[in-house]
Image 1 (tube, rainbow, N blue to C red):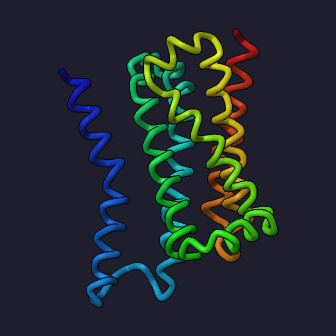
Image 2 (cartoon, rainbow, N blue to C red):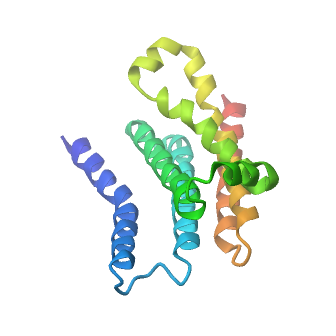
Length: 197
């Protein structure tokens, strides 16, 4: 029962950034004071992208945290965190395709091909899709050992997301570089865990 309440709390906390963003979007639409800055599209892009990366990194942190604190129950939160990462990636893509380029597919395709940062980001988003689809217990049973092999793609996705973030940010690199340091530490923990096992 306690696990249920913890999960409910995690759900509420995870959805808060999106609710805040939708509220700010409504204020903008209603011509009221908002916190989306003078360039709302760019702000939303950075906001959703940063939250996507945070959830990706949090998902990667669950295994080392489980080992350090010997709390196997943490593994029950990994799927939830991963799906929230995908949710914020989806918001990030929607902002790019709808608010930034208004479904102008030829221009969108040109941007994906021409700009390496967008190429990396889109590659990561596409690679994330099979992980979302196969995140259910049914797919875990169907794929067997191949499920773990497939879901190791999350490490590549995390690397692509962090590089994409660094390349896209033109001014303040503090947060993107912080993400890079955290990812490096998590990859190091992964390699160390493999080494000692």
